[in-house]
Image 1 (cartoon, rainbow, N blue to C red):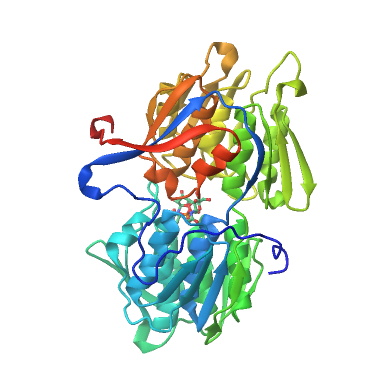
Image 2: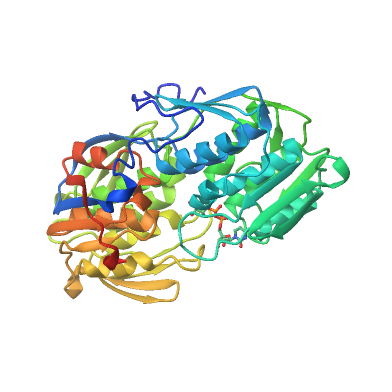
Length: 471
Ligand code: UD1
């Protein structure tokens, strides 16, 4: 609580109780066949300051973790985005009470009376799958759909399931659903499990499950992502005993009961990173807070390598400057990236960096090593005039000294972060860029239009007759 007790939570629309609706996100009636789009007129120059919202991925994990807790949990700084609303709906469908107001979310899951998750909601978001851990651990049983979310690769859940089996759960796949229960009416038991790959989601599922298992659990080769640290902090504040979060080994002493606690969601490092890249791609200077600089250090290094000046104004404020005076006679220089688990370069910023690299001098290599199909934004960036050669999970991006300069066009957001890369490219492109399928972007960015408008961008959200022929 102490670190971010100075966060000012901006008033947000009151949403819901137990029938979560996307109140501000889908104003278009379903039967009118209209598409919401973003229209951007570029090139933009940005200036000013923005407030970074609470982390989407931390919020999703913590909302799932409230299922472990008796009594009420209160989360502050929860972003009002459709993924969070879907997650809240999942909890409601189980019988939990969820109230959301002014960026706060209060959850009480004492009334959970169902162990089968609403499959439609579940298919919308990857994070929904995380409820399998708490449900089995606290209620002894769970039936969940195979997860949804962005279409960026195979995204199996074998590590979640094998880990749960290592804690004594019986797990079966039936009719596209995952059915898990504890054996012989007993609870989960502590055990040892080594993840083949440091999966963020599997680490989080198993942390929640092991926190309520009988005995000690040792998890090795776990994810070190900041969102894992945030989850451990919340669970520990709720009475769990998790040691080692942020390292590759977790020691978890199971407790028979956890109790709801209060937590401020840390700022979203991917949103912060997206705005840092927005400053770079528009050759502008903006500041942002709250940011935890150590969580974006990899991006700070890369942008600095390109020629941007990044300064820490105070403990939680960063200023990113890419104004042309910084590099007279030249321009931002290209650089290569290879995505990898934290503290490596985040896969969730790869598409946005690719957009930036199309405007830098020289050519660069972008390698995606976390997901096996995360390059679909390249095709859309090409529609804006970018020169990118994709080869499997790598891409060579030819910067503007090879004649590439972005021009507005009509493009489609094919996933959340790919969609963000199109916004960034649209800000840099000459003319008007129309982005379709923005529901992908609205899954993860709170008030992105207003935030960009406040920085001086010419961007608006509007509706058009459905253009399904585009897809
Ligand atoms: C989380 C984030 C997502 C981010 C990703 C990697 C949430 C809601 N989403 O997703 O934004 O891009 O971490 O930082 O927090 N894998 C397996 N078996 C499993 C689980 C994963 O093989 O059981 C593989 C995946 O196919 C992928 C890799 O591990 O290739 C990383 O996936 P993972 O870390 O699990 O990502 P998510 O938790 O789904």
